[in-house]
Length: 335
Image (tube, rainbow, N blue to C red):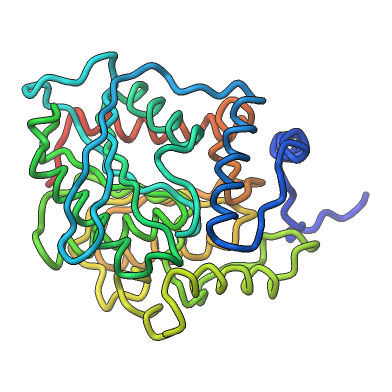
């Protein structure tokens, strides 16, 4: 009988491969300049969403503008789970969330992100406050973490006004937004110590020195040197030319001197994503510091495939998992 190796090369999930093949003809090439790339990326998001029939559920929402000390104001959009804004005595859990886009693209107005926020709010019965933080390279660190911190503080201060409870506030983010979410938990520990019930990190970037990137799972057709080069390009746009900034804890939460006193965490990673190294290393660092943490790696998934709910079965599972964690906040606040 043929021998079966215990160390088989990771393979792309067939559902992801089919979904990517379907989307490829819909995507226009992105130009090199940041503003042009951002514009075309949003147009691609709208085109793909229209072709796939992705629509935002008709749930209540409202945009507010939050002042940020020493930095540009930040827009936040409040998403309620029902057709009307929650009453001030509703006592709902709140998730403060930061979108992903490599610090350079995406936002709360993208069709895909708006639909995701509305679906999660509706399915989990929670309020989501999504921050539309500024893009690099036009705005660079520390603008983004300070904007996200101000969005979080605003949410805590106005929790009851928007129908929530300040002892049932969670913080979350995906990719670069996961970096910002983790930074906010560190800032909160250092500055205010508001109760945070959960930190939800989805394929997060947590070490901007690229020191924890794991290239073992990526395709042989995409050499690690190319992936690292692309990562460093995004980091340079975000941090500028001063490479020492990448070691600041609020830029690279993985490199913080201590992770003690941080909130419980759910960290989701994907097998075919170099950032799985960041997420899994952070899970170990949190656990070693006494922080309750659950980390799950989705086999055969890529950096963005878990956002493809309705088209990739693993993405549907990830959605149900996240909704379940958010629903649990109805029963118990932060310790």
